[in-house]
Length: 71
Image 1 (tube, rainbow, N blue to C red):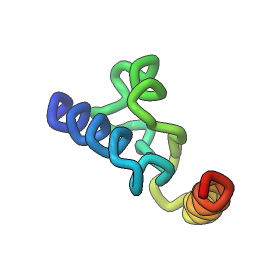
Image 2: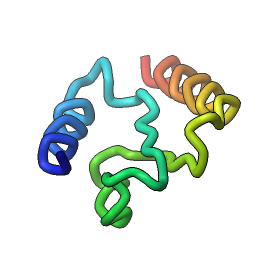
Image 3: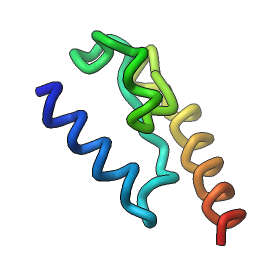
Image 4: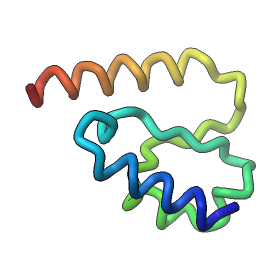
């Protein structure tokens, strides 16, 4: 559950190749109990609806641009 998710996010954030990928949490999932902690773990977007595909695509594009800037 929640502990696994936190460990998973910490691993992603510390991996140079993965650190810019968008981390998206569905707002009504069990992982949004403490939303104040997620930004520190790299969560950068909360979707209110899991079918909000456009927002997801924009986040991915933004992450790719950020990655290019850093190289």
